[in-house]
Image (cartoon, rainbow, N blue to C red; front, side, top):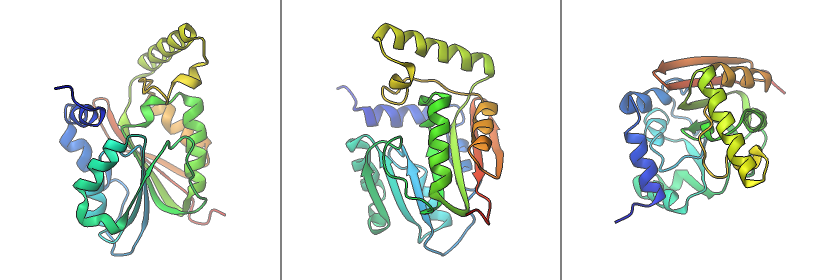
Length: 219
């Protein structure tokens, strides 16, 4: 029997090099233990594997999760049934959906930004920056490559887009084509987007966790 896209993606995550360590590194990299009802947003959250860590460190967190797949959101709700009152699931794209200004203490993007070209990344980073409260943090845990591989993936996408007769930006992020960036590119784009501090908290093979913070006295 053919597996659903949600099942395929979940399986793919488990096959990622260093999967267990990768997921245990995401939340401790930025979220301090607290009993406060902090506001968290998960972008392209899939089935919500990262939420286990969120609720372990912030049991009263209120979490908005955004994903394109209805099947994934169903599985997320089932996996976190006991937290139903704390989770608001939104079916949609983090590229076009609403990110209210100053709404969140933390925003997480796990294994989803590698589908975006630098121009789309930059625009999303600016929106994330505005959606965070002063002192808030953005956590990006994803697949990164070296600079040469980054250029190769980008060229491949541009060739596929040209064959389709559309701009590369119209393909990336819509068809889930891989265009991973280097850690250096991601960090540079985050800094250019107005984050006051950007740190690579963990890096292993092609996996990394980057944390970008908004200045505590930001307007």
